[in-house]
Image (cartoon, rainbow, N blue to C red; front, side, top):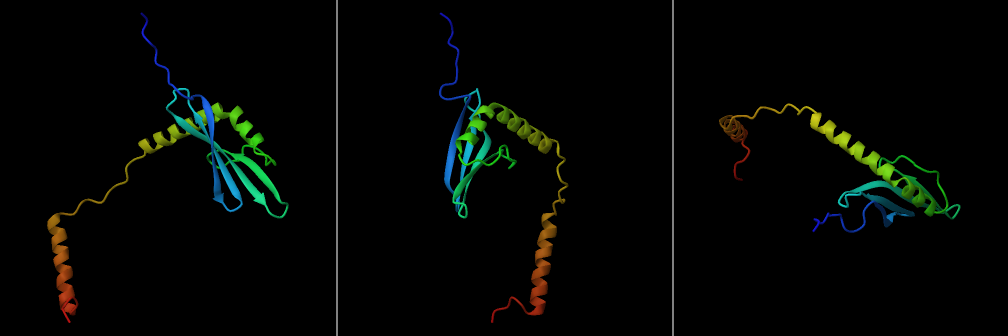
Length: 144
């Protein structure tokens, strides 16, 4: 008998779209999320923004990456934008993961900021006592 090899079940190496119909007045947003081959990692790869122009009474669709850079020119239909994201999903996901890893490494390599040395508890107690004494000298804090 051969041992079973475990393969992730369900959709993987696929692209799914999540639509937000009430993103802003006269606008819609569709997020494109790529499911990596391991089946557990979901990477947002881009967005399709839809905007209505009341003057021309037409919808405009444009695809952007997660940083807000335009990937395509505006078109009257969203299927062209979705097709672009489908065709380039793997490349965009790899670029996004690489960028996230670089940001994580930069944060890890960043030197911690120097913190203020902790005051002694006795010093804090003395400070509170001094504040109370000065308030009493000024006549504040007394009952009326």
